[in-house]
Length: 133
Image (tube, rainbow, N blue to C red; front, side, top):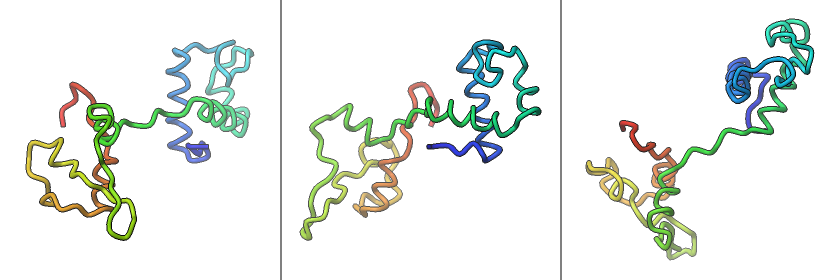
């Protein structure tokens, strides 16, 4: 289970996602109305626990896609690139600075490889095409 629909915000966000996915079609299509042609709000008021479990089940079956990261983009652009290497202790560590490869400004870390900081940087969401950074 990725999202806990007992959390009000998460429940409402997943309810909206479910309605958008179903193209706002109520009635037979909506799992909340279950073929009764009752509106979502009526079902929610009559049996909130059932509504939460229905939205939770739908959310579990339709998880949000994992956002694309800088590491994903590097693997797409340069499949044979070496992002990791083994250090002298035999532990795997980050080998490349993400900011030096992808950003037009100098990196805030000055390009020093600091494993935990670098992994956080490589796992940041990659901006979608056309979106301003």
